[in-house]
Amino acid sequence: MALVAVLGVGGYLLNGSGNTRATAAESNPSTPSAAGSGGASTAGSSSPGAPRSAASPSASKSAPASTSASASASTAALLPTSWPSSGPGTYTYATGTTKRYGTGTLKRYKVAVENGLGISAALFASEVDAVLDNTKQGWSAGGLWSFQRVDSGPVAFTIYLASPETTDRRCQTFGITTIFEVLKGGVNCSNSGNQVAENVARWIDLTPAYKGQADLYHALAINHEVGHSLGHNHVTCAGVGDPAPVMMQQLKGMKGCVDNGWPYSTSGTYITGPAAP
Image (spheres, one colour):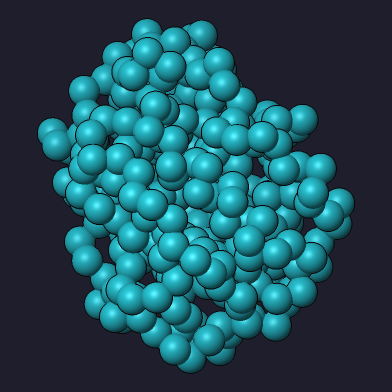
């Protein structure tokens, strides 16, 4: 599912948690993307996915699955093995600015980690960057988008890593109230715009289909939720043995598809499927 899309950006006050400072982009987010988006999504939500926009990249149902488990060396060994169920709702933001990756419309983003998780903002940002900076299989591969992490100024979206309860409060502001119904510890969510909420329970414990594949699951979690921010809706498996599209709510079942965390195959084909019912 959308993780919210339940597969499972400066700060702002959200349901009594988080910073009170808001960036211009967060206060007045720009339209997500050429793909046209709807409302909030969760990778496990029951909301129906809409058909893919004509502006989306062309796709092939027979595209080979990714042979790469990650965009970078694994950081799984650097993560804690447990996580708090709740947190203070305050965040530390990753500092520094990356170079621009890709050639399409620029999407600047910030990365924030809730205090008390035992995961540094720098570590989380390194994985997020590795996913969004992947110009071979990431969202920039199709030439529509480019990405750059910044620590100041307006952004298209912010990616938050937070405790399950803090994630739940954020998701509820998007109208998503079911993040604990799909998987113990909850899932991820997005408002299909300027906020991506990654749940630390999923970041550490993964999902049943991705046990032992931390880097691949992390790529899926980021690509799915950022996909919503780019305007993509849920799709389903195109056929048995095909790579699962990242915009598929994989937590609801693979439906014959095989594990995949990237929008594009190693041969550069966009991986998608029929609109989710």
